[in-house]
Length: 442
Image (tube, rainbow, N blue to C red; front, top):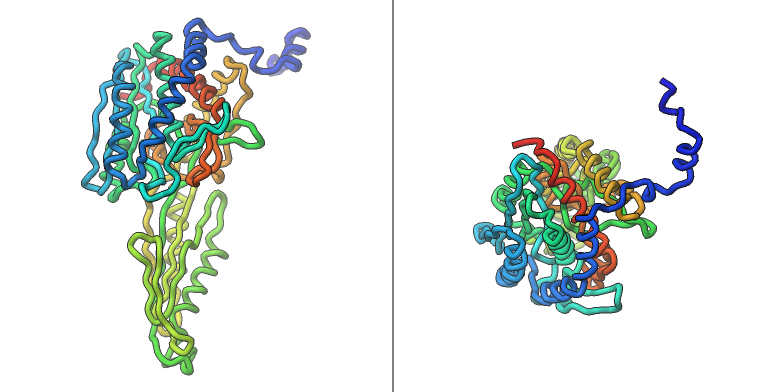
């Protein structure tokens, strides 16, 4: 069992001295073509990014989301994809862009995920693309996720130029409501979930995460769900509060419930935020969840108190434990009223599976070929929920093949342009290599 340590002296010295990228096989002829193509088409893809960004596609701008779809259709059809539009008017959203490229039978089917919409609606002041410098561009959705779509397209065009796209089996789903999904999710995400069940590997083209200037690989994302606690109690004159007859009102019990959440719920990779609280003689939170109303006076015992927030967890089991504990806390008795909990489980978690780790290892094989540093796995606490989570239970998945950026979801959303080309090269080589592997399920 000692043979694994018995390296020849020269090999041992090489293993200690040479950086990992130098030990990797150099890029093949086709890979060289892909790398060169991404570099040669930078101006073309920046111009297309500008066009996409200048078309507003806030989630609720149905016409704008469809317009971005229409801009992309000829780009993908020119590469041999069959494109279809899946209308989502039934859930109050525009629809989804779905494209399919049929390749060699018996090889892996890849699912590429992105989205057409942004958080910036028509009434937002941030509407235009801006070139800040050779390495920085700014605009609504320039990174999230129009930059990701450009990275995807640049990679596919490079594969097409090198001849490696011809045999690749690829399905693309660009949702039109990633930033604010239509409800019910059973309808809004039905096509994405079905695509995940058909796939052998899923690659998500949302933004690249970085730590201390280093590119990171994302093999996990936490869930996103909402909760709402409503306390109703007897109201009356404040002089009677805490008595057996009057009770303690609604606000004190709600405060006790929230304090119990903070003390009793914590576990690794779990967060639970209180986003809004209202209480008084009357109180309510709008259906949109964006504002609340309350009435009352200092001398009136509050009859209603309501709080809402979110829960984010890494596994389904963690979500189940958390919901069960929240329900137990809310059910605890208090003087003069009752409390109810509504728990809304929305985006599922993407757990860090061995299959996901294997995909990151293959991406690091690409990094070695490109002479780039190895990418470590990102802490899932540092990444929010996303569409890939709807397929992660069915297929090995990798997140973060879009560009690096800063200020996402704000009027300072800025893309690091060199990362866009770096990501396109990574994606082109990774998709080519994966597409040549045998299918693992059908």
